[in-house]
Image 1 (cartoon, rainbow, N blue to C red):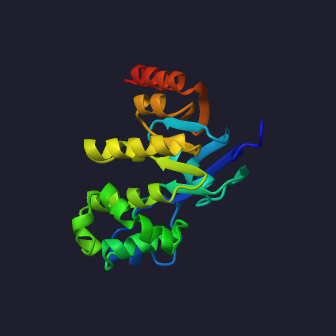
Image 2 (cartoon, rainbow, N blue to C red):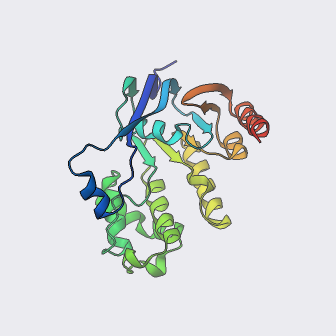
Image 3 (spheres, one colour):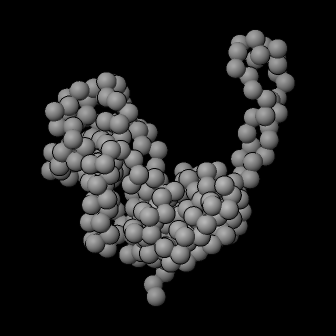
Length: 247
């Protein structure tokens, strides 16, 4: 078997967060130059996983278990405190959608802006511009400045660009569970096309049915550690059973 496209080896990550709220000018003045107390927040603890060529790997877990942090580590947004992450293929992340948008530019100009950042050439964007606007159902709003878009309209545009810019590995954070029924259906159809074309995917979701249907394998995070891994339907069932016990 060839080397994994993504290899996470004993990775740990924690953050230092402010432990004393200062919301008003008076609170900042009264504090003077006194350093703000901080609290240590462990997020991931010795996590290891691999993603192979053509594989779809799901990541499940309750809120705060470290799923999104793990994706950001894989995409190079964060650096691990310990352990190593090796990537052997280009990655297209669909994480914090809207980052990099310019609200003063219209939809078309933002497609060129974000598409370029995601690795699309000007020729590719020009060729696929109408398809992206149609996917987002925004053709009639193409020349409207983004600051007038609703959050849902901006999200649809972001998904449309990201799905068009897919490279070897697609990293998704809850994207297939966002939007109305029609848009979810288009996202799922596009995901199936990406999988059929041989791309590898790393998917975070709370939806056990989605993980069971769209992933080959899955891991379950709890308390920053992997507590279950295996075939996606089995891990999804474990996630559900843990939820029932906790309720």
